[in-house]
Length: 511
Image 1 (tube, helix red, strand yellow):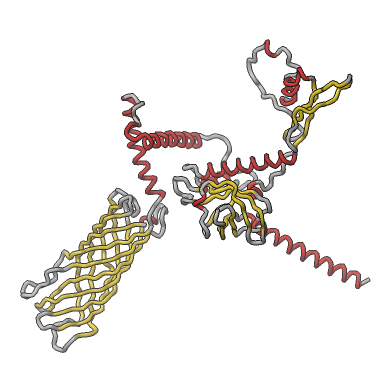
Image 2 (cartoon, rainbow, N blue to C red; image 1 turned 120 degrees about the vertical axis):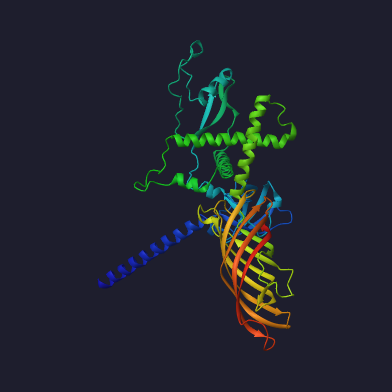
């Protein structure tokens, strides 16, 4: 008896382990099924046969129909974002790959080996939907009343008792006539009575499609409607995933109901009117682009005056939308600078005339589209400069090579704004080396260069092409400390400070 209970306990534990493992596998598989992004592994020379890295474990089924789409722009852009590439059907399925036949190509040039696509499959799009239940009705009636009989069946016999309905007018419809079906629909077969030798026989006049075939066609039509609706929604300029998910968010106190009400509010009415106005403006803008200079030939003087005002507003809105939707967070620049102050003494006959600098810099906007942090940037630069200073009544040349890091703050406009004057303030630190030459006694020395707390102020202007200009003034104190010299008894100082006030003009490229 004890052995019996031991075996029973062992069997129960094993069953429990199997259930837990199965549940974990189901959770993992369900998560895998949610993934529908695919990479094109290979394709035939004709482009009709393609291989994707989606298999059985990714939820693909043998014989699946799919619409292959591709994201051509970021989902945050106000433009066409996702386009259909082709329709395909699966012909072979493997655990981690699948072979598809393309039976309709919208843009075959987009099918490039190694690129990412989105497969909208029939199985995934219709998951959770049952196949429609269809009935079949055979209509048999006299030949002279064939049309009337079929109409009565198709309209659920709603006019059978209304023989005098043509003699009365309908004043008000309080409720629409709703046909009652046991199934989602009925397939109708039409037959007629034919008399042969005094006997009547049913003769087929029309036969509806097979229920299985019709159900399959209806399922594919539903699938294509869902794909079309998805593409139309995601390519709507007003569509945003953030707003879409926010509208579906459940109430935090009651998880059954949505946080946002389905009832119409003044704010929703305002948004709908704004969207309709934007659509009309887009049509006007498109008309201008299509017709060119003759776009206003159908307008009166008053209408033309009003539309010219609308066009200028549209252009300004388009400029703002363009800048906001496509900010460039990376900037490289080449700067030519000259010094405003001169630290040389007039008592020395030698004076360095050409004092200039050349600087290459990279600037990054770390937090693009953040309401506060996008006004701050980080930058790093490398500089070669030629300056001069005086020590004990004698002038010396300073040839410098250094690198700097720093940060800038743009108080008025974000740094990526185009066609507006963008003002900035900055702070920087510098580290490098310098060679100092005293022409009077031909002595040379090498110095370490350090600068902490350099200040900047300037103005930049960005064009839509990505090119920009920048004018900046900086003030910093360079601390020079000698670590090598050419000979003893020279006029070179052991350490010194050099104050620089510099103005630079830079050419910027943003990407």
